[in-house]
Length: 203
Image (cartoon, rainbow, N blue to C red; front, side):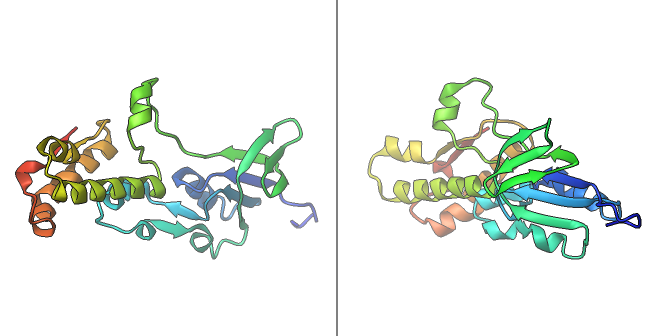
């Protein structure tokens, strides 16, 4: 309650990514109550996903508990929830934990991988927008190296050691570079049966 014994407006933020976290911080001293909803209870530092995908970092190294980020912000509350629908007329967010009323609503749910209508890419490639997806890429990468080490089929080995990164933005460039560094500095040391010339990275 404020000095006039009126409840503070409730700002509901859907999403604990960069946008949602920065907005919530900016509202620290505002006369509002902030409620953040996210299906994960941690914030992902996405610029380092490529390092998780190539084994340079563990997944929990880039995941930060949201409640800890806002531990000293008195007007902030976090609920682990998955939003199902929004009714803008009644100002109600329906989630798997029930109905949540808001005065102001901010949708900061980030983005999904855009395949631009290419169904083959969507079917055959691995996206990388979150920690789970980065770990999937790491698993695929390491499994390919293990299989390439023991196969006697040269064509299969070449296929297993050929990696194609689709997308030339910061993520694509960084991931391509990290795989190339793995080829140059790690491959021959950890997999003596393989050599740098065997592994190809296309971007």
